[in-house]
Length: 192
Image (cartoon, rainbow, N blue to C red):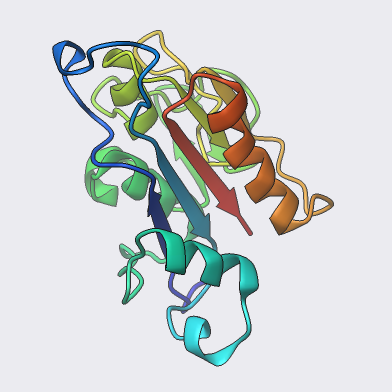
């Protein structure tokens, strides 16, 4: 993915993700929902060059980043997805490569690390933790570091066991299903 962009599609079902608790009158009302899908290595110009029925459905019914996004340098999956989730540059969140050595833990950490609690810098807060602090429930699927605990919190649902055996459409259907079946307002999905 060194020279390819990460394309980020944002589907906004309603307004904004963060609404003060007093602005929501009844829990039975429809809550605002946000679905963020990251397609790793997906260049922005692929949208016009290929038939993409699932993505085109999102484009027609939601919102998109029309020119893709500019990756941070280095253009690797782990650092860029942490930047997307935190809004921080790599030099601020500390993830500079897909695999890196953490001096505090005295070991190497990478995207494939499954140990809970690894790379949990107290100065870094991903979107799903900010949402949790605002009583917004989230599901984070296959996103780097989604299984880590930050400030003693995790998203309501998280899965880092990435697999290519699940078709993209099924991942999308599952992600949207969380909105229908569970009280989540934020779903973030990474797809390679």
